[in-house]
Image (cartoon, rainbow over all chains, first blue to last red; front, side, top):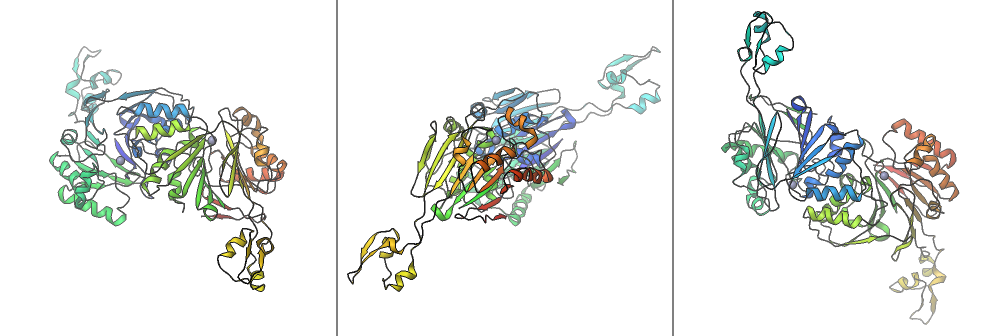
Length: 317
Length: 317
Ligand SMILES: [Zn+2]
Ligand SMILES: [Zn+2]
């Protein structure tokens, strides 16, 4: 599980930051990639990463502002052109279906796959598969804006193969059943309980990715105990009045939320183009005074999300 | 008058070529820039050029395929964000208004300027101002596709200031009237005819920019005697069967048109990503065997269009 930041800018693309897109890479977990928002130029950013468009099978839109959706029609077309033929689901506020359908319709784009639209209206659980459950809650951005909380199911413990060998349990398909904690009978008559051969189960990870918002009461529930909280940081601390007026957050407001919600790591994105090289470090330092494990990300930064450890690694392409 | 190629690729963006956009820079002529097509990422390409979005006051769309229009909503938003507040006109096939209005509507984008939509149905003259007349004709691309012919009005000759001085005509506002070829009376009683003090008039330039098309009967009229013909070149000569099947042209078909239409220079664009560095030179050489003054352009190439000279300069940023 990795987070890759394909667009970390705010409002309009800048020379160094493209508009919003965050990829949650779940290649090990379910051989797929989920996108959160899809600003213009996302497909060009993907070209410069090693991400395959056909692996993207879910796109979560936080809100309908142009810098979060104008890359959708192009990405959907290219996914088809590049061999993507499996269904894709788009979650987002009411209106996203009309936007995509009119764009693809007017341009006479025919896709090789089906798009399933889920226009969300009620907060709560919006999706569940065998590995993850995703929750949504509303934020405060003038326009309808969502935060998403991705909760990984706990992993059963590893099968203790050495212990099985020591007890002369022959390998084969029964290992699969034991791994699921089932009881099986061996050819020699012994009954073996899988639970006796499993290591400790591992707590699933939690990722919270919030759309644009000003300080509000729902962010806490979305962020609580998350391994990673991805939060907008459109303004610097001293501009909290502006942040409130424009329905955005400051870096320090995000850090205060991270602290209160006991997250493990805070990622600040959606950075205005007015903050150049040096100012990015200032933004980060201001936030770190409130919540130490904070990072302002750049386009193409990749963050590994390990199981319950504190050693997150940021690799730069 | 310059042509700047902001996107020279075909279908989907590649690592080296973005999708379609050609800028006709008329900064000296009328302090404005006209775009032809606006694929996704055009505003990002503009960021990397020295072009100002607010100078763009006309956008001509050749056809509604995604690689020619998906950059429009973002560019229109950024133009407003970056201080553009003068009206802008979009010319294109029926459907372009719906696409733009739904995109801006769903994203709740409010522009600081008015967009005037001209959905074209009839070939012929589509626009005229004091410097240029633009004509449109239909092409053959499966979907409705247009070619545009921009004809600059002839320039009256330069005012022969040295001759005026020799004849002791005092400088002042009357020089403006003489420049327009009017007859004026001097304080000393002499009547002076401006036409006697003008150098030879200069023929206006002609630029033909054609949308995607296969070989057809209308391209000739659009291209005839043009100073520059900008033509798609999606396929190489040996793939003329594919070009026909997919409603596209080969490099050599474009060169044959250029020769027959007596254009001065042929620019090949809309190059498939399959043609990498070396193959681009092959594409160009194949075409040059038919029409010598041919160039395959790359993103950000700029071409100066001088008055009736043959010394076109390509500068590379
Ligand atoms: Zn935003
Ligand atoms: Zn095209």
